Image (tube, rainbow, N blue to C red; front, top):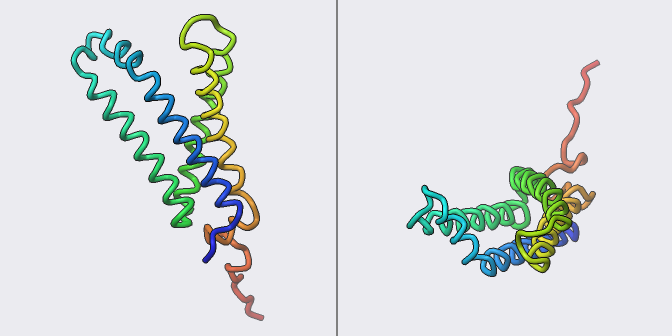
Length: 148
């Protein structure tokens, strides 16, 4: 089966958000490690932060694969859950834009765009052409015949 346009749109937006997230993590890595290791439990344990970020990236790649390549309904709902988390982060990032301090403006904007793309990526998954991809097509489910 050829992937529908809506699934391709999801794929592009979701992967773009993942690439931007990875770029954001790479660009702010030294600051994040310094903040992490400034905590008593984090001293000398920068590898924990790295392992967490790799696990997050792997989870997102898994979500993408399940939804965009396998047509898994579970993948679709995991993508929606990721978008819900990103929606909360989006609100936090909008607040961070107006607050002084913290990351510089380019990094704040990058975080905002990343979250917005993740949220936007799931809307195409509710398109009519995506229903068949995920096996949710109403025509595919035949109603039980009534006995007279």
